[in-house]
Length: 580
Image (tube, rainbow, N blue to C red; front, side):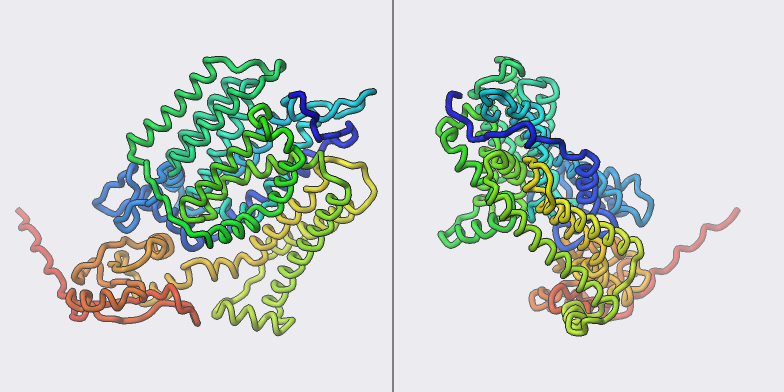
């Protein structure tokens, strides 16, 4: 702790970010994308299918809440808790509102992730090892004000990450894993200041992450984070780590192992890689964690002297450990962006500790780049929307028609008003940022975060009908219903789980594995890609092709509809009992 800190911050640089503005920014980001959106392909729709099967099992069947199934197949991730939450809300949903209520717990989990990241960085920045240099004649930033400014910067950095937008607005296990990993992060960061609250956060995080399909990650985060907190020098103002604290953390890790073993949740999905995959991982991290990763690397460089004894500096060691574990899990499980999602709170925390060390020229470069980038993106979104509504410019309108044949644009006054209001707020913010005002630590992250929220809000309002048309199965299912009519039961063969979930949700039918035709299930649907494998089998069962359901010009996700080759003989009615 004798190493000099690279943070030199005056009290004037930690002025308060208006709470109302920060709250409105977070609320706009969280709600945009959850409301008014149809379930998209594929995992978002598959998750809804599992929830529907749990909440509304087929007649005569009983849902197994410890082995959720869709089309008779188990979830390969064995994620239980997110499906339990969604299914529980669906049970209370009126007809037609199932997807809306199923998303409510995920709205709360995204909000909890943002709050947990803020409080984690606030607690880490209060540690003596993270404090700025004390001035000879006073005037350095006060610990609480300095910690609050860095926490604001970390929250803005998290909102700015490009990879957070889509995955954090889907009702999938990926979002619940992000939420519970953030709870572990904040629980370990606040130890030993708030022992009870921190213990509950770590317990909820490890158990929730285990039940969300990532018990191995939960164990690594809990064990490694506990060792970091045990080795780190304690702050006298926050209290000391006691053996009881370490014993409780060890007990929580044991609980995680026991729960995963009892529910048979351990799954080792290690994927072999080649050297070429390193470039894939690098590209994924390059865009997925932008713009936080350059600041995170700058933070590690400026604090490099402290990294030699990283365990003595929890504000560096703890978020770095979360990033290392998550990137390792991403590498070992198939380079999935959903696994990398868990690294964002740690990267945002590291980016926040770069803010006190930024040179003015670097901060200006960040401002101008983000100003031009997000202004151009917002302008493009508006121009394409105008082309969809008016047909001008004609070339852009023709490109939209070519990419989404059959789409009919619709005008929403509410969406237009919200988008216009958000754009005007962006213009005011740009004017404020390039004007003369006092310096603040979080100023370099205001434009990246606001620009990311603006573009996401414009996409989820102006482009929502187009995105729903392009990324949902709704139009395809409507064509299926034109053929099958009012049939309440469909047989299936060779369809994906996303296609099955689409039929459950959009058509509201009961699905049955393919057998011989019956009066109760007189139609069969199949993915066209599996026709060569199943055509002979379906003919033997007595099915013949009737129609194809696909959007105009679409070559993938085409559903074939089969009818009985021979007329189905009606089942004779039972004679009524004689009356006495």
